[in-house]
Length: 237
Image 1 (cartoon, rainbow, N blue to C red):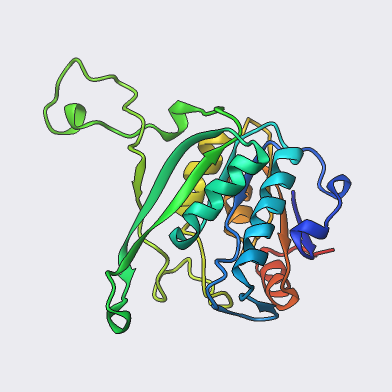
Image 2: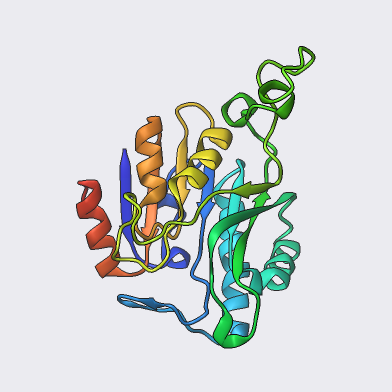
């Protein structure tokens, strides 16, 4: 079942969310991106305060894993917030993507990765995320583990470009289904319930539906949640 809620994450009572087994969070980057019905521009101290509020709420909502991805500009602020809240940092991961964002006009190197922090709980289902090893695919080494190996901590997954079939054009940012699938399939308990506090165009809900899991999604922009609800074929509160 998919449940969509219109509002800011920090304003939604925990009682409205129910049991949560996994959180997948991709908050606004606070870099001035253009969203319909939402302003992505706060003073740095305001945004850093929100990071602490969001992470604190997540820690209170679940004993399960939390996957938090963000713009690398805010790495120090995110780590400060994690320390302030007292969340266990299980592992720092990186989502590396091809078709990086060009920074020529700013004289900087192209943006091609996004931090993904695994927090709160070490729960993982290895058999759901293992990949074939080179020993298996190239060297045909009989010593290779038959089930494959755990992926490296750098996940090479293309970002969603405008021509991709999965692209939903009412949002300027969209996580790829392959990225969210690895997190949800690998870290949600069977028959579990997933929370996405910044659901955007609905990728987490789509993956949960494919895997037969319940999903709760929250979105601050009403125009965005209207379009996402229509695309998913559900109503929103």
